Structures are given as C-alpha cells and as structure tokens.
Image (cartoon, rainbow, N blue to C red; front, side, top):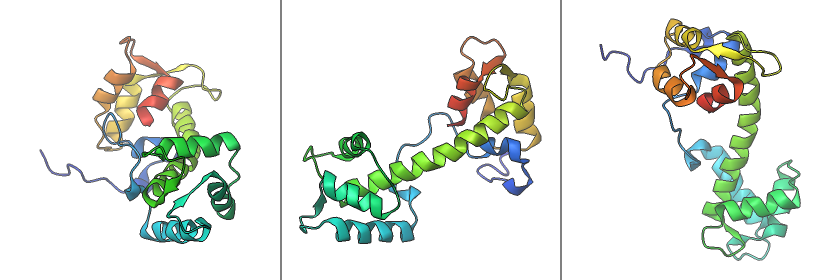
Length: 181
C-alpha cells in the first residue's frame, strides 16, 4: 500500500556499517541549496560576510574571502579560493556577493560532510562483502536484501540499474560510491 511513503524509519536502529544507505533518496540527487544551512549558520555567515567586506562594497574579493575562511578555522589554498569564487561568481565580477557567499559556505559544508560520508560508504561496502581497500565487488542481490530488511524507502532497483551498467549482478566500490552520493 501507499502507507509510509515518504516516512523514514528511525535510523538509530540501522547498524553502523549500513549508515551510508540511509541518506540516499532517489537517483540524481539535488544540487547545492541554501536549505543545507541552518538559520544560525546563515546568521553566522552574514556576520562573517559583513565583518570581512572591509570596504563595505557588498562583495568579498579573494583577499577578503581568505581572511573570512581563516576566521572560521579553514585554511584554503590559493587554488581553492579561486575555484570557490569561480564556482559561484554568477556575474563574473571576480568577487562574491552575499548570495554567492552562502553558496560557497554550502559547498564547504557539503565537502566536509562528504569526507565523513566517504568513511560511512566504505564501512557499508565492507559490510556488504567488499574489501577494506575498496577492492572486490558486492552482490546486488545482497544489497537489495539489506535495503528491504531495514525497510529503507529508497528505490534500490533504480539505483542498481544506474550503477550496474553491465548487468553483472555485482558492483565495485566506485559504482557503489556513486549510488550512495
């Protein structure tokens, strides 16, 4: 039946190695969105932005961006700084206005989340029969069974169709990682 569609079971019952499966929704996940930030984080961003927009121009240049990120405990390289600006500089000004700045902060937050997600994905891959060094393959049948046993509301068949392009019934680490992100 349709009961429970969109309802997620309490994941506290999910054993640690399978945690990576819980965050997956549907194929083709959403991109960067300011909703990824809490109101407190947006307020902290606004304060940092205003503090480091030294000239009050309403935009932060690369030097102001470096100081801002350093004040938030990050040490970006020159390349990272220019990449951040290029990634969100919609108007090509070489500077970041506040909406663009929020996109940078979302990207940074997602990059840090991705690092911890990666270890969760490796744990899940190992739990499903893959190697500790990301070698080997896991059975799509076993993956389907685990997802169904835990009552996860992800379309695992669609994800497997997307990942197991050669229809071998097995997926390697890289295919599994792509499924989980």
